[in-house]
Amino acid sequence: MILKEGDVVFEVPDKLTVTKKDEVFYNPRMKTGRDISVVIVQAFLNLYHKKDKFYVCDALAGSGIRGLRYAKELKFDGELKVFLNDINPKAYEKIINNAKLNEIENIEVFNEDANTFLSRHFRFFNVVDLDPFGSPAPYIDQAIRALVTRNGLLCLTATDTAALCGRAKKSCLRKYLAYPLFGRDCHEFALRVLVGYAMRMATKYELALKPVFCHATDHYVRVYLVTDRGAKRADKVFEMLGYVKDVNGVKIIRKFEEGYEKGFSGPLYIGNLYDKALVEEALRIAEERKCSERVLKILNAIKGESAINQVGCYDTHQIGKMLKISVPPMQDIINKLKEMGFEATVTHYNPKGIKTNTTLKNVIEAMYKCANIR
Ligand SMILES: C[S@@+](CC[C@H](N)C(=O)[O-])C[C@H]1O[C@@H](n2cnc3c(N)ncnc32)[C@H](O)[C@@H]1O
Image (cartoon, rainbow, N blue to C red; front, side):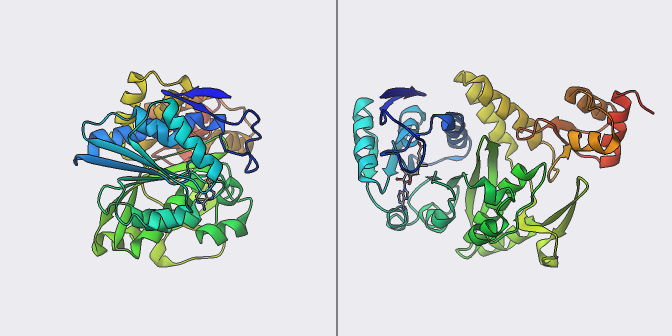
């Protein structure tokens, strides 16, 4: 069947089960994530890319929709080229045909194992995008090596949320060398585990990765990290890693250098997950391109989150249960916290989550005040 996504028309098999069994993989539910990808890469290009060539790698390309959208939708005055690769010969053929269908010529298509392909392109790409079945962990090392060492953008999707969100602890340990945090804000901790893992993988090459954007949507998480080089910068990465424990909604944080203690999760990233300027530019582009309401809602929530440096959030439902009160409307609680002099915002990943720069005690007070209870 012929479909359209963004500016690209493409063909996928008529019957899709959206599993590995499909002749060529395509998941229409990931459109939101791909829309956001195009917007984030464009924002990155606008703000941080100063060279005249921009090489993007879609290493696990499936039908090619992601890479073809980059090739067609990104606006760049210099040379823009997208390298699409998939191990499946049927996907390889489909990508070539889909490129012809759109008269896209600024691409090269390959049919190799992703790690082999990436290892042949040492320090070559400005962007490496990994969108695998399940975990990107098996490809992260080669992806890091294939990126330019300064201002390279690593984009990772992970659909193994059972592992990252803490329902499959051993799987998380096996793939990400970290204990996950299971709880109401597990999606944010999934992002932090994945970011922390990629950062640790890069330090041995004297590279520092820094997250600039991420989101947890539907059944997957997606993170974007930028490369920088130098042993000293790589050493500093460990200052941004740590272990976290949730005690009744309050996060206790141990620094990485203090070591692991039983009951804590991690190692994971404990710094700010967003580059504020990039988030704002992405939102501007998304509005200009008339992206869907859903994309705009996610980006708007993230704009709020990016201004507040809280690890995790307060779950108003959990608090309401604890206090045995019904939860006032979210916006009322947020307004009340602001009236009390604090910053507060909704989160993009938990409709009942509030991020704020104050304590649980003050959130409770705000909720009581909203419910007119004293
Ligand atoms: C989730 S799909 C990609 C979806 C695509 N990026 C999109 O946005 O629609 C994962 C793809 O990875 C490919 N793949 C699996 N193992 C691979 C490997 N070792 N090297 C290269 N491609 C691989 C599969 O054939 C499949 O097409």
